[in-house]
Length: 609
Ligand code: M6R
Image 1 (spheres, rainbow, N blue to C red):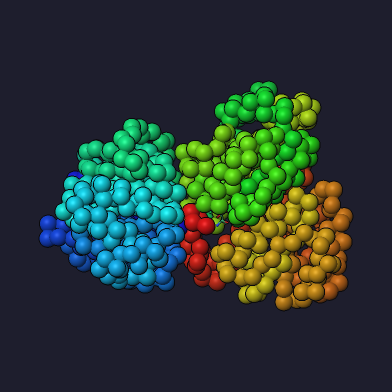
Image 2: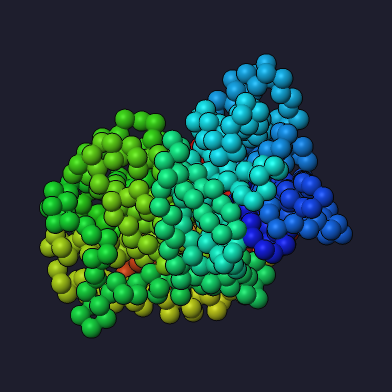
């Protein structure tokens, strides 16, 4: 949901900002812009389209300056256009913004009444005017920003420049992410780490309600009342190469192939390899909480929600603890029956999804403890949770989530075994079996990934269809949902996920040779049942693609195309069965020429409601 970069230091700011915007392009990509303070004055360039269009616009110009701001946009207020692209300027004030200003209509009319003229349809432009208004009434740059932010309602991460105060930039955070990078005689801030990593590993995730006055040498943090706060950066052990494509055609493909590694990294140090015990001491789940635990409630969005749905099957099966799963945007607006005996588990790759943040705040208000499964260290969700279990998937850049999902599942297995053992719900030998099964998954995945060509072949045969049905039962039902989501988001092909047992209650009416049906049909307690569902589709001339276990020959006979995954404990099959579906969707998208890593209308982190 928009990416911001700000740089101040000794180097040319333009290439640093453009590079940062490219690394943040996953956050939004309908227009972009830069503002650089040069000897000749301020240079602002804005362009509808992708960052490459902005680069084309500025590449033959000499825009030399060591202070600048940049922005890549995902439109909320005002369509994508050059005029609505950021930065926005009012007099000497320049602003880039990620978020939504909810009271912008009233502020805009008040400012109009005071003689301000607006050039865009955005909510952001009012921020620049508001600050300008305060400066005109005699306030300093810092004081004017504080006065303005105290008038704003909504979510905002801001980068602000004042032409007459060229030795500093101001960064502000309220409900939208912002990271400060501490360099050597240079400082940089951005919406996410990848834009900062090439310059420094010393970073600080800003808290809500804080402002940073950033010069080349000093970062001064304050709260919105102007009270000074200590700025203590942390050293992050991540390299810029981890956020690059490394020879793959797309980030999505690279991230699919990183899954065996990501899963191993997520297990590392949490399984004691000699005793096969799971140790999640880092999450600090107290005995008191465990002993009183009556229910677990997952809250998440999108792919992370699908991991939560699978988590219900896993945790209920392994521990006998009842589990509910909520889409965060629904949970936050109902009256959830959550109490202190409920453990709320938030799942989020980015740790910045606005609805999930709101859901955990509500759960806490009801007295529930919150544990988060997050990929981004120190992100808002991680910081606001009582307990955190980090997935170690490394930066996920592609908008379509892949390795985050399988690492989230890995964390859920670890958590289920950990809780099950501590509550004595899983006998020791059974826990060892689970751990052995989990440890074997990465090499099974390696074998699946070696068969990418088979999946590319199936994708070729089906790439021109415009509707797909994805069906699964039991633990494979969330996998069917996730497979359908992957296809629709990157190829723009309509795909619907459904529990296979439900098709006779409606969706079977859709079955025809024109709508391929993808079955996730793995060995387990509902294997015979899903075979019946395949028969039902076959009897109606449906085209069948099946993901099945190695000895699923009967299913192969019924299918027009099949892909085999190794047999394992049913509860652990989602990690294996989802990967062929990721590759299938990826190859269909490539064949159809869509923008795989940056699908239209989407953004990686949904930091607005
Ligand atoms: O960062 P989060 O895991 O909280 O993000 C949640 C969803 O926005 C995300 O999973 C989305 O559905 C992905 N684009 C799916 O591939």
